[in-house]
Amino acid sequence: QVQLVQSGAEVKKPGSSVKVSCKASGDTFRNNAISWVRQVPGQGLEWMGKIIPHIQVANYAQKFQGRVTITADKSTLTAYMELSSLTSEDTAVYYCARERDYFDYWGQGTLVTVSS
Amino acid sequence: DIQMTQSPSTLSVSVGDRVTISCRASENIISWLAWYQQTPGKAPQALIYKTSNLQSGVPSRFSGSGSGTEFTLTISSVQPEDFATYYCQQYSLTPWTFGQGTKVEIK
Image 1: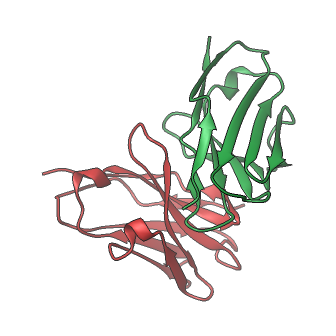
Image 2 (image 1 turned 180 degrees about the vertical axis):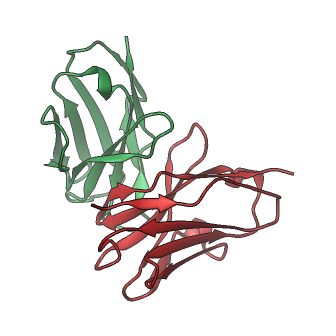
Image 3 (image 1 turned 90 degrees about the horizontal axis):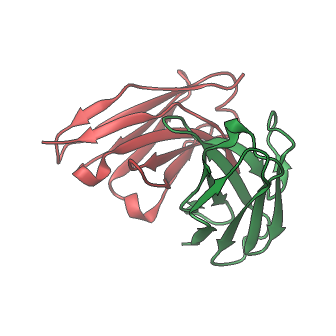
């Protein structure tokens, strides 16, 4: 059974960074990518980037290039998304999802609130 | 980036109604389209992939069709648990992009 369990909610100051984790079960890391998708409250879904853990290759959306870093630790089956230079516009729920072309399994989401 | 446009933004329907949601891509995505359902406070769940393939465990009242730039999600007879927001997503070319969502609400 595939499960993606994310870390808990965060409150951050503007200008700081946040790192969200996503622990996978089973063979999720094998031959799959892990993507990160965010959702600003009351709005739609936005893909940020992904990593292919078994070859350690990451790919980012242009919008977040330079500000987001996605990594994966194969030994603990955990993926990470770090977003820097936070502003209030980064207040959102951040989801990890297994990518098999489309997103077939999702984590429960992590609310990141950016506030002074 | 490929733009995905859904219509309508909101649908007010009754239990048992047939529902059709449209999704248009700004360029040809062949059949690389998925649909997701999201209820408030929950993560999206995959319904359909590659335009018309039902995700495991999804009821057969859901179906998808289309190709190229025009796609449709149909719910043959809406049930109470189907009141939610639906998103289309293209996975033809990165960055993967989503439609803005269609909220199906109770009339």
